[in-house]
Length: 290
Image (cartoon, rainbow, N blue to C red):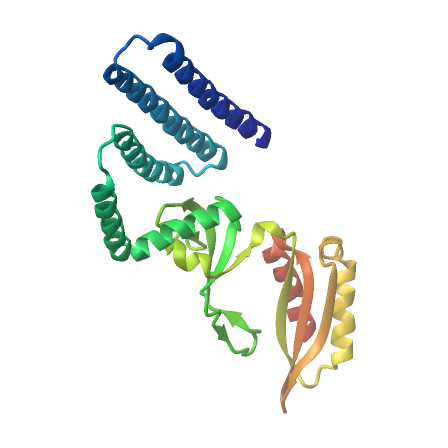
């Protein structure tokens, strides 16, 4: 893909170089006999055409990138913004070429830009945050991600859970100009502002193959812990499936009271089969607690 982009950029520079050479040749060899006013008009038309061709060619590159990266809607918006600013710059250059005083126009445009920038500060922040996400690529469309806000709040551990993060987990549906759309585990849609997403803690589940699980069991005090641990490890070892996917594990006492005690089971597993693994281990543990 990079090789194709390099070829396209090389073609772009070649077109610009040829355009400059042709314009120079036209100016030197073919229009010596013409008056200066005709030369100015012809040069103006030639530079205008070259500028339009360059802008449209770069917009075409954006379109190709959008198709390859599967972010066509996002790139379409970026391309529109690029065209607006590029054509404004081209118009100012051409007016200056015709020796039109553009100082007042530039001052007015600068003042208007400041006003619009202040008025649309949040929206522009989301746009630039979206560009940052698109270039850094912490995730792609189709990835399963977990998002926690920039303050990274935590819920203290309570039985039978460990520390939890306040977060949103789902599949990335679309990276838009202002929002990134995420489909939750219950098929709900979350529209996360790009600026907030750019400052959030992001866990990309598609970039890891293993996951750590935590299960906690409350066992009657009459049940010997060492016996329970030995029996549970034996069941996992004899299970042809669990013995392959549970890479490493630990079984420890989590808490003790008068009537029972808690057992914490930690294991590193294959993330693709988390539900199956948890159900099988919990099933063995329930049978052993009786």
